[in-house]
Length: 116
Image (cartoon, rainbow, N blue to C red; front, side, top):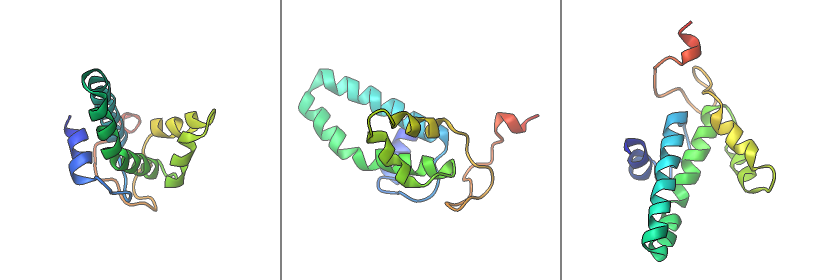
């Protein structure tokens, strides 16, 4: 839940920088769970919630693309029929190590492949 709140409160319209895999997938997990709960509670509240979370969802997606070294414009592929899987493939990619053109890594924990 911490990752979801972090994206909503601190990175609401942040489209620059990098977001690690955990941040993206934890945000998406809680976003889907909240959406399912609101679907059964009140559909009008669901519509309002979805409208309010468009910017953070796009922002975390673009930052996740930046983390894997891809241009943020790849997020447009997510809406193309039969090509949306490319976007989600990029979401599963590991972070580019070190600094890339979108900034440096904000965390220092080694990935499992670096542990040897």
